[in-house]
Length: 208
Image 1: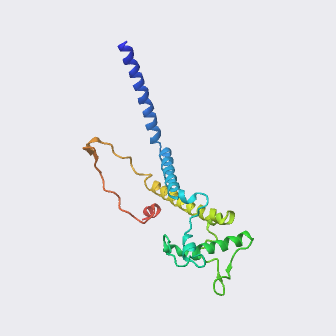
Image 2: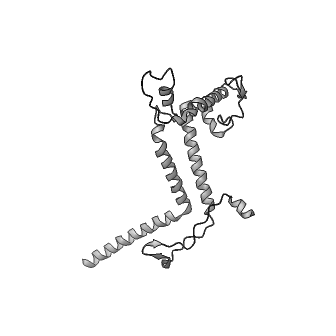
Image 3: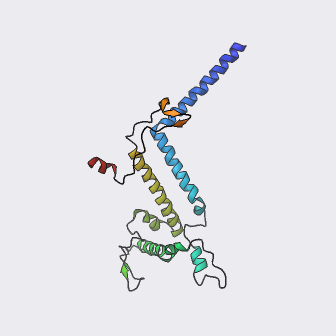
């Protein structure tokens, strides 16, 4: 009986070891690690923006409008605004984008803005982003959805392209040396110092 139990325990241990090795080998695959990194990035963005993306909310500092602008400002009451530095968003940027979206939906390309002084050219306005790809959200959806979608889209694209750039920089790096002589007291010792930060792209480095 003891021999049978020992054999059974050894078989179970071997089976668990094989499963562990399979999982370890699976995690070592580059596309799996990249997928997990991208998934973590998207999760952190969703976690950061999650409360603002709930129904009935929008990523705009509308407390400035309701608390600091007459006639909505309540008389003889203290003004409670989270960040007065965001006044440009509701004073200028959002109205410009709304004007742009209304014209595009009406079938007109807004080349001219008649609402500023005696009128100003509109296509040069970088805050409007008339030909910016993510402005498509304003042309297709209602403005609360468009505001949230553009901000979330910019964060996602920024994170993905930064990850792709860093992945490109490390693509040709040699694997980490696991020589036990380089590890003492559980602390890894670096063979080489970290590379200095350079503003040049890899193509520029090769040309140089």
